[in-house]
Structures are given as structure tokens and as C-alpha cells.
Image 1 (tube, rainbow over the protein chains, first blue to last red):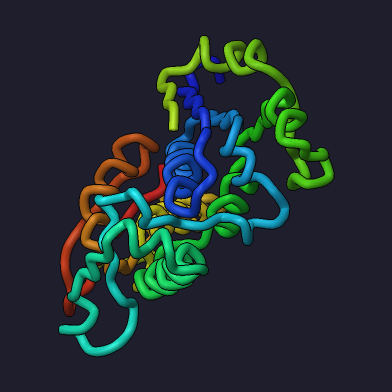
Image 2 (spheres, rainbow over the protein chains, first blue to last red):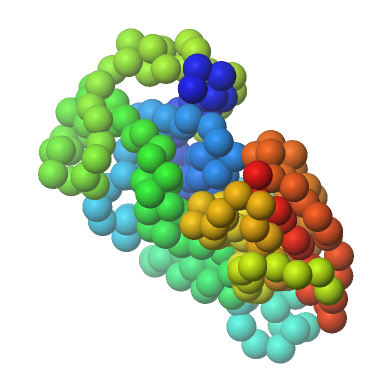
Length: 170
Length: 76
């Protein structure tokens, strides 16, 4: 199977919104017959923790993020709640509220949860490698992460990425 | 409507789930068998074309029926 295409991804972001691209692309590539490896480093380590409840989305300083309500009549859902950064920053729990609303929107739209997509990746034999240096840097233990992880450094990433057809940094 | 061996209802599911479910269902089918997929994701029209092209399975038909997208894919 040396003609099998290869996709290498570096996942560096640890928020709920940025958790999607690596898992969506990895699972899809795998369904298309690619061999896939994701290297999780820095905040990307959050995506392979057993406990995913720490994944949040923040509208603060993120002007591209529409703030819409996932419930109520259609006219109400269409409103974009343009809340100034200075207000967002001063409301305790604003991030948790935005995350709860985002999760509801995700469910309303038939979009998979991160746990589900991650499982689909694992079923499809996408390889997960965690950066050992950042695991230590952030004070994590291997037991914080899901089973089936490999722990290695940059050299291990290049072993696969150097032969990949597509290499993405996220 | 042409004949099919198995049906997959991916209604209400969004990218990339229809493709992933189709891939999984095809995996359990035999060569030459036909899978019917029903989806509501408008992106799935181009996606199933691309899926068939890249996996070597044949997209026999792609159309709309009662506001839903219907695909017939023959397993290679």
C-alpha cells in the first residue's frame, strides 16, 4: 500500500471551535483512503484529554463569531447579539454561556460532537501522537489522555510528515 | 427508482457525518452492491461526487426527492 495517500496534521488549538477542523479532516481523509496522523501539541493537547469538558469557545476578541440564539422564533434566532468586548470581559461566566449556546447550536444543526468525531477517527485508525515536551510543560500525565496515544517529539512528526501528500498546521 | 441493496438515512446529519456513515456502510457490503443514501446536507451533493471519485466506487445517480438528496453508490 505504498501508493496510499498520507495526511499529516498538527493540532495546536485547544478551543471547542478549533477542535473541529483536525477531527473533521482526519476522519474524512481516512474515509477517502488516506493514512492519517495528527500530532497534538501545546493547546491541541486539550483535544485528546479523556475529559473534554474544558473545551470552550470564546467570542471575546473574536469578531468573526456570530452570536445567535439557538432557540426561540426564527426572527429571534436571526439576531446577531453584538456585545462589546469590554462588556463580555466583565461578565463572569460569559465564556461558559457562549459555550453552552454553541453546543446547543451544534446539536441543532446535526453537527457531530468532538467526542463523537474523535471516536470516529480512532475507529478509522487515525494515529494520534502527543508532543511529550508539551505534556510535561503543562504538567499533564499520560493518564489524562485517551488510550491509544503515542508520545514523541518533533522528529517523530517529521518521519510521517516528510512522506505525506498533505500537511496541515491548525 | 433503481434497485439498491442497502439504504442509509443520513437526514439531519451534517458534514462530515454522511460521508463517514456511507463509508462505514459500504465497508460491510459486497463488491457490486448498491447503497442508497438519503441526506439533507446541501454540501453532500458535491461531497458524494468527490467521495466516489476518490474511493473508486461508482456514483450511479444523484438527485433530489421530496426536498432531500438521494444518491446511489455502487461499491467497487
